[in-house]
Length: 241
Ligand SMILES: O=P(O)(O)O[C@H]1O[C@H](CO)[C@@H](O)[C@H]1O
Ligand SMILES: O=c1cc[nH]c(=O)[nH]1
Image 1 (cartoon, rainbow, N blue to C red):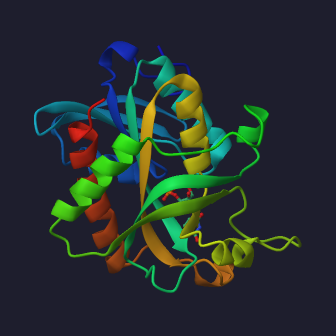
Image 2: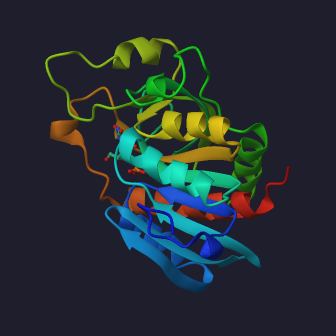
């Protein structure tokens, strides 16, 4: 039994969708045939079922890299081969509009976790085949939402303190969007031999103070999350070695 996920590895498919929010995991898993819950502990809610005839799991990892890393490590221990994160993020670029989608090709490691696993020069990159599968699935998607691919930033901080956010710096560097778990996913995958990717629904512009402006509970976000979930399900069953 996986200690924190409380999932029996024998019931865990090799292909997994992960997301922060347990309710999103329930929503995504409701699209599967033969959907069943295979575990629930803390923020980790796990489901399995089939998508287009292929066994898939959907697992929530909570907010932030340390808690998410526990999830990713236990998925690796459970024999998982492919993981796609279905997340949300704030935009850094005017043309990446709220309600649109971003496929992360790599993550800036501005998190506190991964440097405790491997030195800072080690890259956090999506698996090329998984990223390509996401791009292909997005091309076939009927939602009409715009989809960009590029570098994203992983931070630990969501609401600012007295230290300024590095938003302007990474905006200038061409980073598309900011979120809180991709670097942990990409680094742990590289260390444990899993193939991973990430697609993000943009909930707003991250240059404003989120304490005033953050609202992911809009109809536009519901539409974007629905679209990214279907794209990720198509990609996670299509990707091959
Ligand atoms: O929507 P999820 O997957 O949780 O991702 C984003 O939303 C959370 C913050 O509200 C962080 O986990 C961030 O990475
Ligand atoms: O970390 C996050 C997640 C969503 N939106 C943001 O602006 N930041």
